[in-house]
Length: 449
Image (cartoon, rainbow, N blue to C red):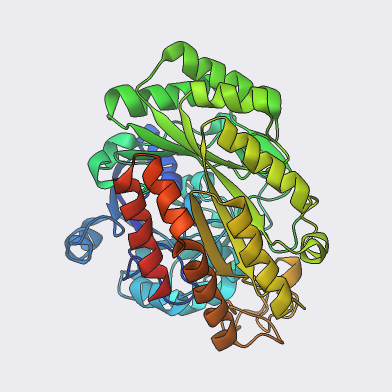
């Protein structure tokens, strides 16, 4: 039996709505799903529209020959910040054979019945897709599969919520089904892979979309993680990677053990991760640097103490500054992420955030409009109901009190005032990596156009 898994491209590298960067990153959740399916005896193919310019033609050839088609609206790297152009995805889904189409991703998890109706798919997976996808293509009685919405006798049937997946039950991703040189991260290099050591986050920030993760944190056995890294580096030839956990160092001892394992193996492997500025220290950062870490992503969000409190970030500006300072002292670059347009946020508070970004002076700064996703605390004012089967699926990009035109102007101002600084450009040139600066300026140009 042949199964086709699709990660669609989204047109432009940077989506205009919400300014989502459609990076050429491996579709990790599809690759894990593929491994499960192959172990069950299926023949699997992955078509990745993010890296393949001819992917539409491949779909026309492959879709009719496939027994089942799995289409994701958001692979794992987009579980927190999915694309906002739902219409694009629906149009693509409706161009595929509906009788064998299975939908997965954030959009269907938030709007399951609406997604089922609008795409005309056979079923929509709610939440983590890997084990549910395997069940859909192997079991006849879909009513026994938790975490799906499916068609039966012309009606939509929704089963109960699935339990969180145990990461120890998931195999290594199917690296052999993708072409490593096509995948890259402009801040590190290529070939570029994704890994996860955990799913979930112990914090409760009001803006964070955790629909795909569920409550709490689940960890992958470290020995299994090391097998994945060995396969990716020594067999598939990946040289760069991202541990895409929501908070890589929150469990400090676990992070240290992963670093020790990498140091002992001495792979030709450079990596980055994401964590909080209050979850690092000098000893940990030094170990991470020895293990190959060259970049850390920090979700700073705001420079306003009131906004940090209101969003339940549970961190203050001084602590953020100290974490960034320690990271720079350890010789690790930083990428900091900021958001403007939180509920009730004033222009002066947005200016505080822009100034705070300049003071932190990370190598890379990213500014976005806060998105009130359904299912988050700041999404309470969204007009769409994920439980309404006929709801109009939409992700608003701002809330009451903030004009989209005004917010876009503030985002543009943030980028320009941050990157068009002689001090920033000179500091980057002094690091002796002009190509890195050039890549960042190209990225900046894409966001301000």
